[in-house]
Image (cartoon, rainbow, N blue to C red; front, side, top):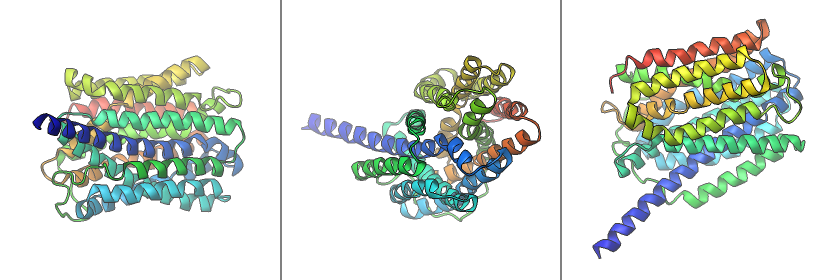
Length: 385
């Protein structure tokens, strides 16, 4: 009897982890599907670099708006309920990005896309904190690894759709259908209640010193990630001058090492410690960007983007896991607080690339972003966890 009960608990625990993993995959798939078609949408709307940079500002604006609201909703209703609603809405908004035929319409839809996406992001990371509590060990990086696998899958599928000249709206409808199927299959297996998540707090919470530093580290990493998400295809098409169908290679290279790095990050963090991992991460990120700038050739740039992926792979999972264990505020609020600071990187990074590239060139813009990678290592020396 006790053996049967033990097996049942193990199976339930595993089912919960698989369900949360599937929704991490969903959020990554939706985002990467959009990112994979940015070059096509830029061409369709006849946007120059500055115009694209301004347009890309809309998505992180929606993301930042959602973050404090997400924390409050999770504290009131629980991360499971918020995640299910946000995930359904995230997939529903995706096809509208392919329908937009003006920059104004696309800007509005991108705000909604960013809003729903980051609400799902905060909720699913809070769910991951709950799974960590069940397993009583660090597994956050593996969840983010599945997000990256979804990014790689979305980039590859998006490249295929682009090569077939399928309009983005039909591509995005396929992804929405897959997403809704995942939600239906997993909705009853999620963590019903994460420890301490339902403690009521105000809409805006002043972060303590640890959360503030974690947020700054996340911001530097997200600037680098955002550059890869939004500008890697443009860099390969414009600077590396690849032929049609190969503009997504840099993004795929970045996502491949980002994904694989996250699957070993928990083991490496246990062995080397958080500070050393962040130091290595910052060094790899800065080095990879500089390699792509100094050697603007296909193989060298691909290798450089792989280094960037390896560099940023562990940063956000480490930061979110540390924030979720905060004793000062509930996990949903702590993750939302760190994310609010971190997503300033998504807010300012990609648009800044566009403006700098328009005034100078993409090489100089990418060199500037390499400094953010170095800043990750510098700020890591100030954390005490």
